[in-house]
Image 1: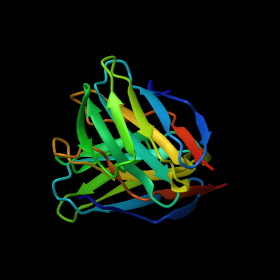
Image 2: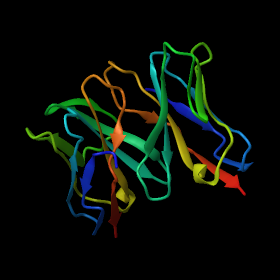
Image 3: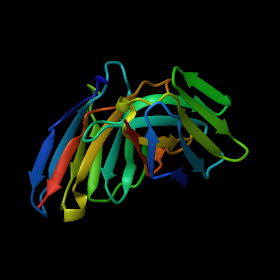
Length: 112
Length: 114
């Protein structure tokens, strides 16, 4: 157990819908990262937040957004969902002074 | 941006033999190189990492080597066991740069034959 929690574990929805994925980092970690894992694209970095502020952006679509709240939990919002958005979404956390990222168990999103 | 190539995509070895997975990266500014193990349907778990000021690091049966000049790094697993069967990912990152996310290779499916 990495100490990073994610909810829900599974999510099934329809095209065009909007969903929110939630992540709680390890106690004391200030950075949260979001990654998407799909068969064709592999593991891709989406976005990073550090202590409530957006820090870095990767291959995140405009239909996707994220935020980090004062209690440091983070939410990833996916809108206008397409079939191709079906994937495993992981969040990871790290402390401010560490390189090491610890991954949560992931949320499996299925878009029908 | 950074690009990480990983080979082979599948590796089958006899139990007890060694396994080697190789990665190359493109951004010479990358300075942190972790390796993750992922079992089917589970989260990636960090197994070892190396920073650019070190050439080699070892942890029991696992070792990682880094050649900054050639921009490649490798994972070595000795005395392989059935529980080593999984998908292994290498990654690279520029710590302190504008984008702090990890760039991953496509993964290597390691199969340990009994």
